[in-house]
Length: 110
Image 1: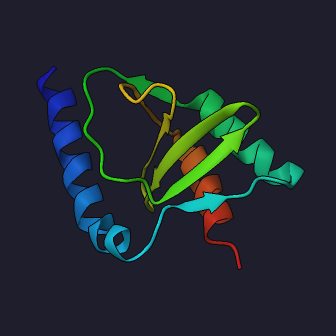
Image 2 (image 1 turned 180 degrees about the vertical axis):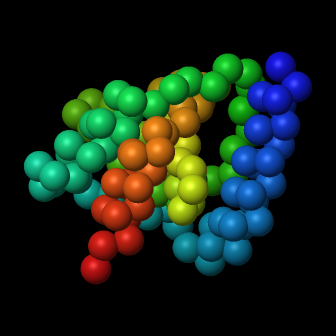
């Protein structure tokens, strides 16, 4: 339980430090998933993610995306990623390592 609490503290600190300035200057970016490849990447990311229990207090997300009828918030860095279904803001989901790489590739494409 202590490890999980420390993970939330570290993740929160990293997210605040990394995204705070961007959130003040810009709005959340919407990722438009029209291409089959983008839909496949984000569908896999959602399916392969693991839930993290506990109350969460997250900074505004840098990205949002929709899959079908569901909308998600996305926090992504080079090493980790977190998503949250906008209908359930009390649960976050950690992305798998492979999904972090694929989502980063999509987000950072030219």
